[in-house]
Amino acid sequence: MDDIQDGATRTRAGDRASAIREALHDAIVDRRLVPGTKLVEDEIGALFKASRTVVRTALQGLAFDGVVTIERNRGASVSKPSPEEARQVFHARRLVEPGLAAAAAERATAADIALLEAHLAEEAQTSATRGPSARRAEIRASGDLHLKIAAVAGNDLLTRFLKELVSRSSLVIALYGRTTVSSCGRDEHRAIVDAMRRRDARTAADLMRHHIDHIEADLDYRAGDDVSLRDIVFDGDL
Amino acid sequence: MDDIQDGATRTRAGDRASAIREALHDAIVDRRLVPGTKLVEDEIGALFKASRTVVRTALQGLAFDGVVTIERNRGASVSKPSPEEARQVFHARRLVEPGLAAAAAERATAADIALLEAHLAEEAQTSATRGPSARRAEIRASGDLHLKIAAVAGNDLLTRFLKELVSRSSLVIALYGRTTVSSCGRDEHRAIVDAMRRRDARTAADLMRHHIDHIEADLDYRAGDDVSLRDIVFDGDL
DNA sequence: AGACGCAAGTTTGTATACAATCTGCGGCGA
DNA sequence: TCGCCGCAGATTGTATACAAACTTGCGTCT
Image (cartoon, rainbow over all chains, first blue to last red; front, side, top):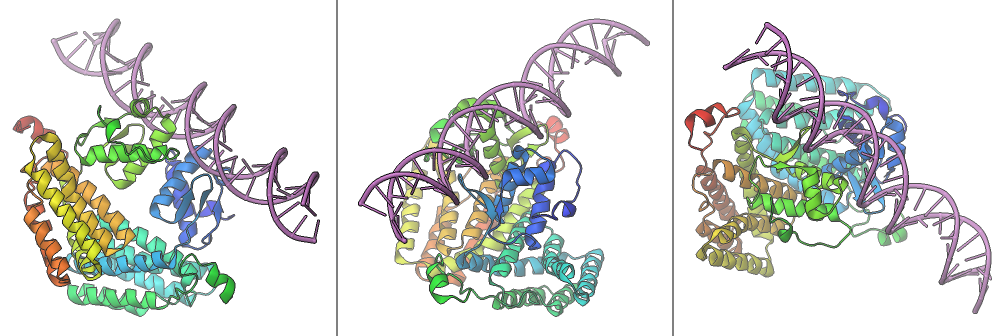
């Protein structure tokens, strides 16, 4: 918890709580803050030069996003989704995203497609680069495409919900991901966008479904299926 | 804003913010608080004998649920979804609920079915009763069945999301509903539960889709498509 | 008479003070 | 030596005080 301030989208002053919230949110989905990290109100307040009052509202907002967990009298920490929660995240994505992809395929304008293609190009570029910050950019970009598709579909509620799902996915992958990244294959992304350009809603939905299956296939949920502890202590893989 | 305190599920002391939040949430979906009502922090604080601090967190929570809108320096008020938002709510429900119904049909145990049937019985009873409070109970119950089905499907994330959608639907119906209630036909509810007992996921999903269509068909989105005012003043229906 | 502007009152935004709770360490006793 | 009790530090929960912003109504000027 050191180089966070930088990432803050220095939004208009006045909504400082939102600024802090976004900065922390970014740090979490980027995995600069790993699951389990304690988030002490005073520390964050000092970091952003804000009183505990505004830090608190920021943390509460993150708790609603599901990326932070608040326990009474225990404070806030970066969420550690259980395997069960992780499964539910992907179940929800399988249920929602194909429909979103189909809707996007039907509604996409030329400008929308251009935006998505630009995103693919950017993905290709960062994946060529090496280094930890490039890798972070890659992780983030892979989730961003899903959000951009949702935006094209044009339903703000579903977009917000998917944003939550993608954020949680980032935590899940951090905890249970086998390979550190790879996962969100760029080829699959390209295929989905291609289907959209062809206005092929059915195919876009199918490709999206498989894509999500592939992401989840890279996970290994054995890591304390109940509340862990027993498995962790006596198995010792981790 | 008078007889709210009563409805408060006097939950365990300690989480007073949640108690206030639930009480207000109930009051809103019950339409005891109509869209547009201003929610002043001091008033609510006096009502619940709590400081503005806890009232604030409660209101922020409701804002995340989407049933309350907070404008900077303007305070909180019960949300007034625009026709566009209303359409998005039902679009989201059409996308999510059939899949939820299918999942519920596959997973439902005998106990689950019994619970849903009990709910149907209760619905039948309250719909026989007259009076405003019975009508309120009916409105609430009709939404509750959808949530119970989601609970059977066993995905907490989707259940939470649907809870938000149902709450917003209540506001939408309050604003754009043609008939005051009727809408959520009990017959359709029964048919859905029947399909679940038969483990007929496909039919359950189809019935749910049609059911949602029927609910939305009872709406009339012409009612100030932009920001109203002009229409309201010069049309005078209301 | 109408419009503009100022000032009082109301309401929210933020900071800070105090109380309650939890955590960890050290001493005491078996 | 091990375990339990209790105190001290740290951290959160709640209340309150003060500052900033908005709203409203009145008075004055044109």
